[in-house]
Length: 414
Image (cartoon, rainbow, N blue to C red; front, side, top):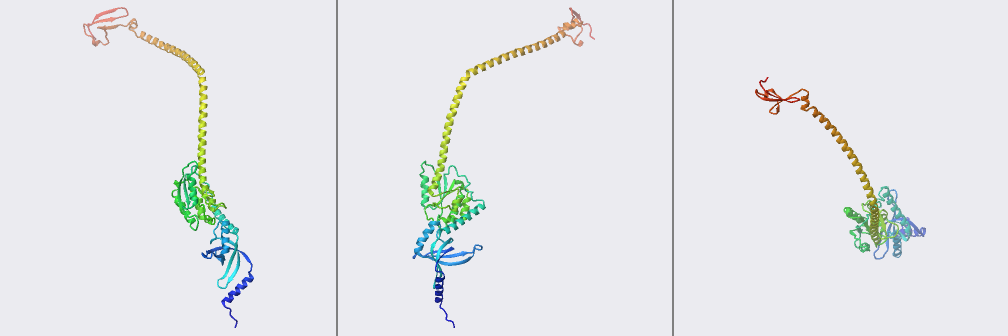
């Protein structure tokens, strides 16, 4: 019968074999699925995983540890270099040694980390988000919005206790030219796991009152550089890209832009710089107004000079123009008088001719002409007798002939 090994002996054999077969340090690419920091010792316990890129299923998993003396140096170096917290969900390139413990089993001990690998992965994820937004046709929508000439009504998304928010308000309130700004705060978490959720909620609240604001400012100011990765999410970027008001970001960093910075209307480094930008817009409007005022004043002065010159010219031209006008009027009057004289003569001649015709007709119709032709006119009491029935026997009649009158008495009437 073969001699049996105890579990401990077997694990010791495995440990001894691994130490002999894998004595060196190895650079390993993996994703952190879990990160736990022991509160008393400062050791960091992690879990490394690798996923199938086609199905996202786990294909490998290993426990790891970063001893406190290494973690104290490694963590700030990594977070300062990447702007990313050393937390679950990120991909890392770590230098490890392979160890096996009889009680705790297989694990990897982290000796070093290469931040550039994580930066590359983060940049790749940012590129993927930006590419998706571009394919959807919304990447530059917010940048294309016109910035108001007078951006005075500002909706601010920030933590109410952030120093950056106080700096922003102080800068606006104490601007050198005394411009008025109305600032409404929409509180949101600017670090931690609730950044995306709280900023989206603040954007929804602003959108419901969009007609009351000219622009939106998202400011962070202060805080750890490692918290910047929370601004590299698709949902947050898509919401800001399609927001109906121009968005200014002043998240307080100088490294490469976050996805949020890339889709915003304008990105500045700090909250104070965001306030300075708004003040500069007001300065531009005020300077332009001053320029227009100066141009208006100069234009009025020049116009008055031109009109004064024109009036002087008119004044000098008035005497000659008056003489010409009077001469022209006199000539016109002479012409009218001549025409009037001719018209009067023509009219008088025409009426004279008519009167001659009437005179001839009257002459032709006069009783003397009729009497001269042999006609007579019988009168009774000075009135012409036109009807014999008007007479009675005994009436005395006077008959006029061309030469003389005849008096007769009516004897009978037929």
